[in-house]
Length: 137
Image 1 (cartoon, helix red, strand yellow):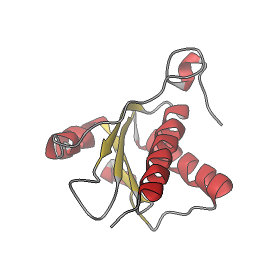
Image 2: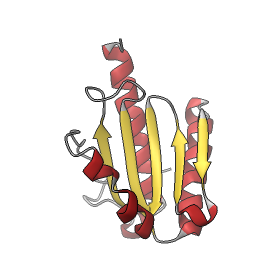
Image 3: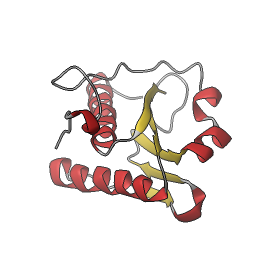
């Protein structure tokens, strides 16, 4: 059973992953709370990249910053190349970076439509996205 302290930590981690993806101009960022639905993770962070190169940049940024800030490495990493989908598994949080075509094909949000979505905070200037000057880290 997951403790409240761990759940709070996993929520903060999910929000940080979303923030890092946002800093690399990821689109359509969604954080799904999976705690009452599955036992293998607390949160899914899902985002869209314009292309495979941007998808790799998003995944690389998340890996680098979480290693620097929290000494965290993903327990598993899959995808890349022509797959159009990169997965970083941090156990309590799993990041899915899709190209638009792959996101449409797999439709994870539809698969987990009953999962509550976390509200993502705006940047200091009231908007999200590094293209608008709200880059973080």
